[in-house]
Length: 434
Image (tube, rainbow, N blue to C red; front, top):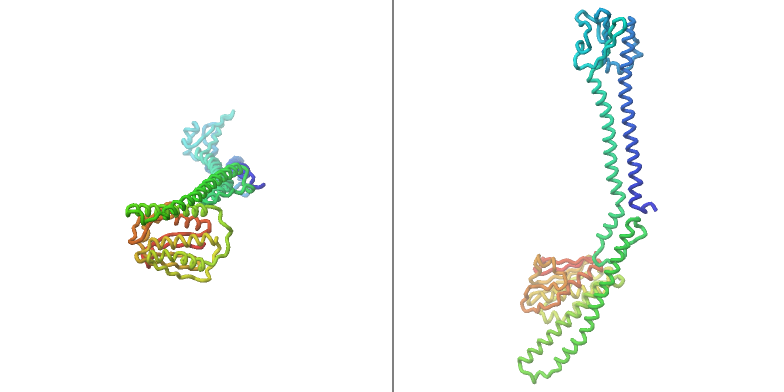
């Protein structure tokens, strides 16, 4: 498989790259040095040819001289002194009486020249010299050609290495992106078939971890579910026994105690019911279906009619009758009930609740004191009871209603948020249908 290994992906790119860079740099160094030396040697050859021609009282045809002669002609010098020590030939000009007699190379030439003296058996002295600057320039040219080539090769290698390493690590980046995009409730196994060789052990370990977490959560939810079911029976028995007591035979203090017991049992029963709802909200959802939202809202408001009368709250419904969304019908009913019930509980005295449905969102607003910006961050957490007091209303709750709303919204791909109601001044809960 083409992407079977991260190591292979990187090696397949880096080995040819390094080899190509080395070959390219070697090519530039070799041919650059060759060209530079060839020019210098050609110029030396032309200078020697001109000298020999002048010694023969002749001259070289300019067509047979190289173009580099003009560049190098002043960098080389040939002089000849006769047996008497007088200068008889100068390659850079005609000997004059001002030219000193031969003594030594350093005496005749300056320190900028490198010279060699050759004496014949007849006493003639031949001096051949070149400028030190020319040697330095030649060395610099060769070094520059070499360093520039190596620098280009290094730059190309670094850029390519960065690119190929990033490309080679794409499978790891993709795995990281897959994990980052997952929701907290998505504990499904990661795909393994399309993973590179080095990532398969990691994917297997992650899938094993997900499996253990799923089993742990399943045990926890089963425990909560069983505990809630088991609590219902004794709570019902306690409440029935309290209600069966003949209140006419009790004094006022005892009646208040019995009422407190019944109220406590009712709160415990509500908490038990909420725990069951929370457990069900975190389980795998039923298949999605096309649900008409308006009838669900009307049914919820009808179910809560007694609560609205007791709380002296009016609930207005403004809906788009043909609004249809893909979701779990029971989840939509639970979300709507929790939000409207919460709005009734925390509205004013008397209160007003507005329920608005559009094609893209459900909004529930009340005229209560609202939710402070600091509390909005934590309002959907478990047991996140409001610390606000509402005139004439019983704020008692389990602290699980909005947590259930959040869980159900997530598994139905809804987006739930809270803000301040623009017109009513209380809380505004919005459920966006994505």
